[in-house]
Image 1 (cartoon, one colour):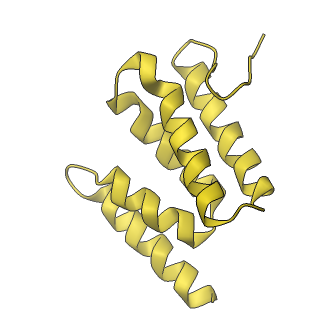
Image 2: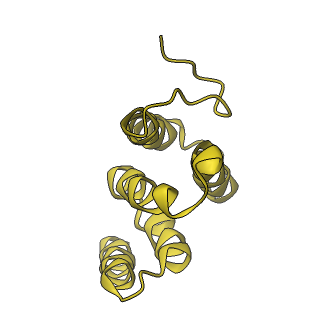
Length: 103
C-alpha cells in the first residue's frame, strides 16, 4: 500500500515537472497518493493557468475528485480547501464556489 502511494506521488511530481506541466494527469496520481497537501499545491499551481474567474472551479474539481475516490476523506478535503483558499487569496479575491467566504 505504501509503495503504491509513493509510486503515485513520484509520477505526479514527474508530470508536474514536465514541460508543459501535465496537471490533469498529476491530479489523477496525487489523489491516489493520498497526499492532500501536495494536491493543494497542485491546485495552487494549476488554477492560475485558467481564467481568473474560474480559479475556484479548480478547487471544486479537486474536491469532487477526492470525494469520488473516497467519500470519507474529510480530512483530505480540509487540507485541500485550506491550500486552495490560500491560492484564491493570493489572487486577491475571495473564494466563493466552495461555499467558503473569507472576510
